Length: 185
Ligand SMILES: Cc1cc2nc3c(=O)[nH]c(=O)nc-3n(C[C@H](O)[C@H](O)[C@H](O)COP(=O)(O)O)c2cc1C
Image (cartoon, rainbow, N blue to C red):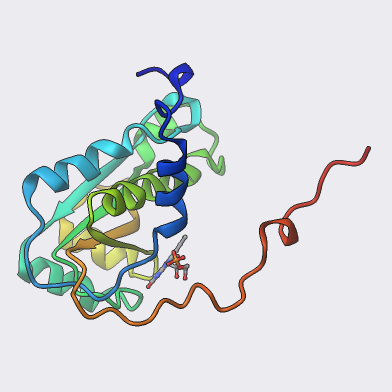
C-alpha cells in the first residue's frame, strides 16, 4: 500500500483504535509471543521520521531478570511488563547525517515511533505504555549500549491483566476545540 491509498476504507477502524488506546499498566505475567513483538517493532519503521532517516535503535528486553533491573532504575515504570522496547537515539548517526546538535527531529522521531508502537500493540490486543522517567545512565549500563547511543523512551508491553482499574481518561479532559486555535482570517 502507498500513502495515496489511504487506509483502504478502514478509516473508522483507525479512528476507533486511536480513540480507544489507553496506557495499560495492569499486565499479566504471560510472555508476549515473538510474532506479536515483531509486529510491534515492525510498525515503528512506518512512523514518520525527520529527513526520512531512521536514526534510532530499539533494544528489546524480555528476560525477567533484566526487566526487573530496568524497573529498579525506572521510577516511572509502574507496570511489570512482559517485554520492553527501549527506543534509543544513536547520536553518532544523528551527527553523521548532519543534524545540528540541538535539532529536535530525532527526539520527535522517538515520539512518533513510540506512538506508532503503542497503537500497533493496541491493535494486537496487547497492553502498552510509554515510560520516560528512568535513569538514562543506568539503563545504558544495564543494556551495554555503546557510547553515543542514548535510551530516550521505554515502551512497556504485556497482555492486559483481566483486572483493570477503571478508565481515568473521562475525567473531563479538554474537548478538541479547547486545544485548537484557527488561523486568523
Ligand atoms: C513523553 C511521554 C512520557 C511518559 N512517561 C510516562 C512514565 O514515565 N510513566 C508512566 O506511567 N506513563 C508515562 N506516560 C504516559 C502518560 O502518563 C499517559 O499517556 C497519559 O496519562 C494519558 O493516558 P492515556 O495514554 O492512557 O490516554 C508518558 C507519556 C508520554 C507521551
